[in-house]
Length: 273
Image 1: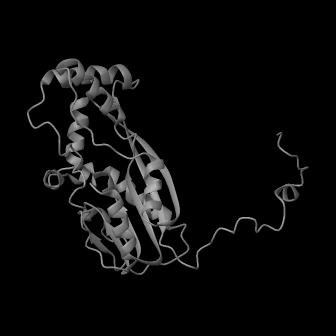
Image 2: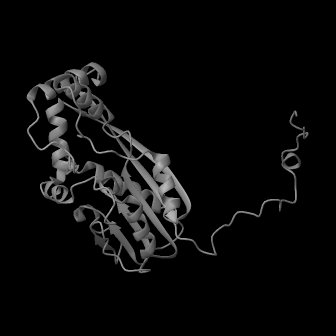
Image 3: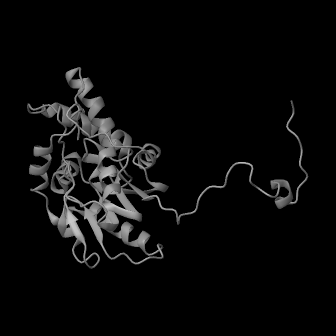
């Protein structure tokens, strides 16, 4: 991360909160591993030197032989050109420099190496974000950062191209969890290690009235038929390859030998002037 880059997240606080995680609360990380394994089944290649960039090593035990597991620190502990596969799992949404993370992954990959990345997407916890914002504005007359900003799928896909990856693909895996009340949801986030670690978060205690009002708003808008609170979690899965001469290349414009109308066997008509 460069010196003049905005510091969105407090890394020390994030590390401390991750240290208090509980294994049974890491269902999103388990889902991320399932998605990675499922996608690798469709890749007709054996990987001999994989690397995992992830906050919690216990999720990735026994992943593939010879796997190196490292944390999602600002500076990744990966050697240049040492890997044919890098999995970056559930850490990019906490990165102060997400493009820098991707560039470091590309640097660690050999030619025609695969990056497979899973992170939380922009619709994650939109119910909580909306309810807290409206409640705090009503009670305190102001607004403070409480739910971390997360990238939309189009923006995250564009990051792959900015980082120099070829053949980028992005897709979504949405899921909804149900909670008894707001306290239950926020407790689960703490046990996931996903509680607020934004650098400019409010450091003083939040008035109880804010949470009481937020629960009312949450129930008015997002309560299920069974009286529980619905919470959206959105996993964005990205894949990209380091450029190689062996990969499919786009044809030069004007090099086609047959008109599209001939291929489709339909009459060709000119557009109106």
